[in-house]
Each structure stands twice: as C-alpha cells, then as structure tokens.
Image (cartoon, rainbow, N blue to C red; front, side):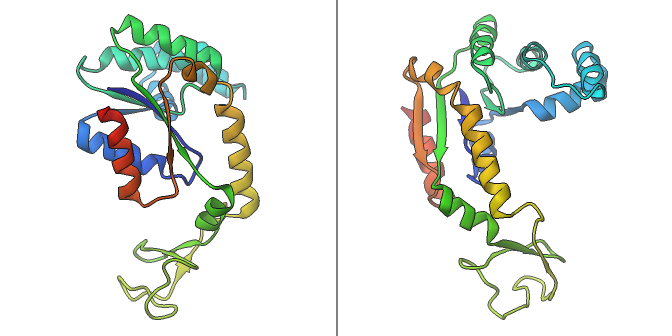
Length: 215
C-alpha cells in the first residue's frame, strides 16, 4: 500500500502517519528527513543538495525525486510507503508516477485531511503545554483541573509555541493550499483522491483512513 497523506499543519497528519506505520508496518518518506540523511551520509545526491542549500537556493525537483527513488530502492518490496511533503508540484507528481513504476509499485490512495480554517486557528492558538513534563492543554477544550497547576506533575509553569499565532496559522494554510492545488487534479483524474474530515477525534479520523485503505 502506497499513499500520499495531505493536510495542513495542525490537521493531525503526523499523528495519522505514525498510526499507519504502527498498524501496517509502512514507512513514512519525509523529504526533509531524507534530505538531512543524505547530507549527513554524504551521498552523491546529498552532496549536490548541500551545495545548493549552501548557496541559499531551493533544492530542485530532480534532486528531491532522486531522494525518493533511492529510498524506495532500499525498502523491502512488500513495505508500503507514506509520502510526506512530496510531491509538491505537478512535475514532481509525474516524476513519482515514473519512480513508482520503476520499482513495480503504484500509488493506491491520496488522502486529504480537510479542516475548517477558523476551527484550526482556534485549535492551534489555544494550545499550551506544561513547561516541566510537556502535558498538553487548551484554553477552551482542556484546562487543568486546578487552575494554573499541571494535572500530571503539579508544575505551575506553562508555555506556548511562539509560532502558534493566528497570523502564522493562516499563512501556513495559504501555503498549503498553494502547494496542494497543482497536484490534486493530477490524482483526481486517476480517481484515487479521498477527502476526510480532519476535525474529528484522532480515533475517528484513523478509522476513516482505515476504511479508505481497506477499500
């Protein structure tokens, strides 16, 4: 099973990818992780990418696609892949078709976690964590039982991520829409796109994804 899992930051895509790996033995192919690995291991592609990044330029489609190609070559044939952050352009989508074909694979599903932007802003901007143990809370949905005291460890220190602001979240949404817009028609023509309500519970979204990949 090979799937592309789409969703804006905060939609729970990372959590769902982890569950797919846990339940089905799939591997998450993150272009960012693969790029760092290739640079660290000083592979041919990694050295090319490092030279480009050192100049402050963006890594080309060809290099990103080569990373995917190399990773699939190293994977067992019966291990499924979850593509994360790739493809981002129609050219990369066409590259992926060719790469999968070379490895006797096919793309089974493109699953997009749909979100309500205003609700996502509320979800992200309201979250905070215990500075001591990392327990998560939310201004409206999960306050500590005792005001100002962590339920788990009793600490009175809390923190918020500095980029969890409405402006930042809406910018992320705009970037996400701009990146996914070019590739969705490519896969809609193949009839493999499914949209799932990403605003449900973690378990509910997971069950919906399981329903898609079982079909």
